[in-house]
Length: 333
Image (cartoon, rainbow, N blue to C red; front, side, top):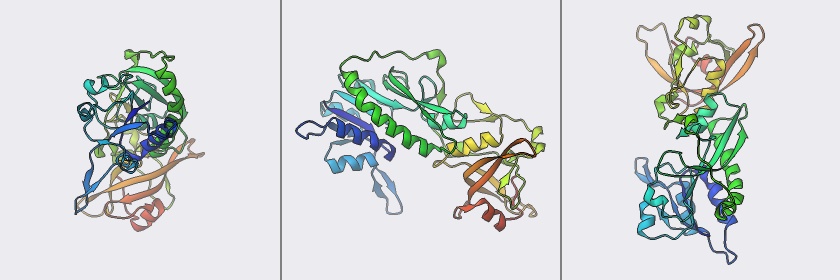
C-alpha cells in the first residue's frame, strides 16, 4: 500500500511517523509515496527559508515533496490513499479523484459540528467537557464528506489549544493504523453527515484574540486574583466570538478563562491597559494574557479569575504580581 501525506506543522508528525512505521513493507520500503506541505516561508532580516516540520521529515527520509497538490497528478504519483493531518489548504476535486480510495482527513470535532479551521479553539471557548475527532473521506465541500470513524477525548480543566492538539494527533495516529486496513478492505460503511446540525468556525486572526477591557474591569491589587466589578452589569453582555459563526457568550470569570486557554499559544489573548490613568492622554498599551486560572470565592459564592502571567508589549513575560508591582496604577478602562 502506498500513501500520500498532506500536512504541515509539528503537530502532524506523530500521524506521519505512525503511518510510515505501521505500513512499511516487509522489504523495508517506505509506504509514503510523497508528502504535500505548505511552501517554505522567509523569516528574519536575511530572509532565510524556513521549511515546515513535515517538509523537513520528508527531506531526511528522501520522500518526494510537493507544495502544489496538482503536481501529484502531473507527475503521476501512484498511491492508493491520501491522508490529511493539518495541511491548511483546499484540495481540488481532480486531486481527490486521483486516489483510488480517496483522501481521509482528520478533523477535531464530531462533524458536522464545528466545521472549518478552528474546531479545537471553539470547543474550549464554548466550555465543552469533551471534544470529538472525525476521520472522514473528503469531497469538494468544506468538511462535508462521508464519516469513516469518530471518537471522543476529554478536555481537561487546564488544557490549552496546544496541549489538546498534541494529544488529539497522538490518539488519531493510533486510530488510523487500525482504521485504514479495515477501510481499504471495505468492511467500514461510511455515513453521511447531518447537514441540519452543521456549525462553522473560521480561520483565527490576531485581532480575534482581543478581550474588551471593560470585560476585564479588574480590581487591581497585590492579590493576583481579580474579579469582574458589579458595575459591569450595566454593559451589554454579549461577547461575539468572531471565529465561531453566529456565536456569542456572556463575559464571566469562567468564559474569560476558557478564552485565554483557547488562544494559547497563538494568537494569545490580549487586551488594552492604561499604565498611568493620571496622565491626560490615555496612552493605551497592549497586554497579552498568557495564563490564568479559576478559584472559588466563598464570600461572593462565585468564581474568580486569577491571572498567572502577562506580557506588556515590548517587554518579557512576568507574573501578574510582578506586573502590578511595576505598574501599581494600571487600569483596564
